[in-house]
Length: 438
Image (cartoon, rainbow, N blue to C red; front, top):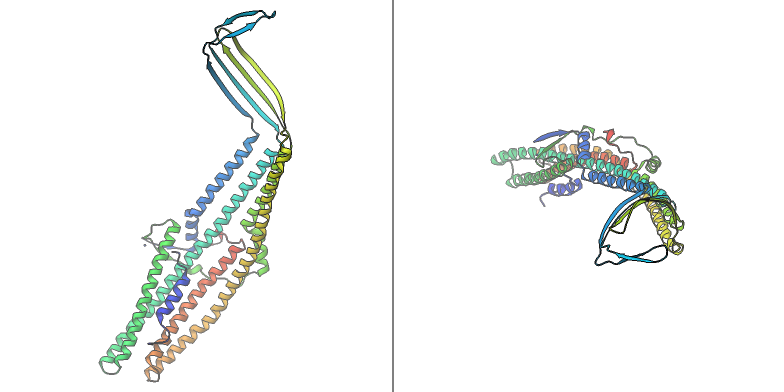
């Protein structure tokens, strides 16, 4: 082994952790990115379409209260029709030559009572409409979080490439110095080759890091609705996690009160209850009024005009006594499903908040440790370099110390970004993430 800690191994280990989401050059603050992400989110466009559908469904349910009206007309042609009529004394009158008929009707009916089906149908649709709107608000929070994640990951990719590039510059300068020493017989050829191999490893790591940046930029451009070739310059000044946060119990309480998916499920519970009442409506009779107009014309026989009618009707299906029970059971089962879904959601909320909470504090603890490690690796490299210059240390050990120093800087930078991301994830899980706060 040339040295114990291969730089490529470090880069290959760190880059997958970037979770890369994703050139005209544009500078973006986090607020700019979030605003664009919301504006161009296909997920939110889909949410808007679902809201439009729910609004239309409520309108349809409300229109059930309106009267029904219909107009119809018919024309009939008879073949050799024989129409016989009788006078008051039942004496037959000669057959009339009726060979056609024209008649039309106009009817209007209005439901006075329908077993509360219309009332609860409207309520159910309204609850579902509000649930869909709350779903859209929840989707917006997810879009904001995903946009932040993409921003953070692009920042991590950029900072990784920058640190690698800085070390590559130093490594190339070292190669130049060592080549001069080797040319003057003051350095073994083998040591020069070791240093040059290290430089090659840095070059490979830089290629991987630059590729990661490109993929991250393309993905973010797609999220923001920008041309794929746009190069994003990030203003990362805001990527700092707070050092003090609320308690775990407070976040759980906030989640139960503020999360939009919880509120949406509450509306769906109300819709399911209204669905039960609507299903029970078949147990009741229906009552309505109707009015109409009839006109008819049988040539050479009879003409009818100004025939108006008005009436009240009641209808009851006896079969509903044994058929409606199944409909009610289905409605109750749907309500039970919503209740179980709510219980599952609360379990998920408590678990996800605990995980996000622990992730945040784990990141903070890592930052404390890594700050010390950066100081330690810097001091170790300084001592190692002095020892090497005094022939008290091998070149392999010096190169290992150099890689350790780079690794600790990378880990510290990435840990700070991870802490910020953990904090925003915790905010989202508690229903506190809002695009206006950036």
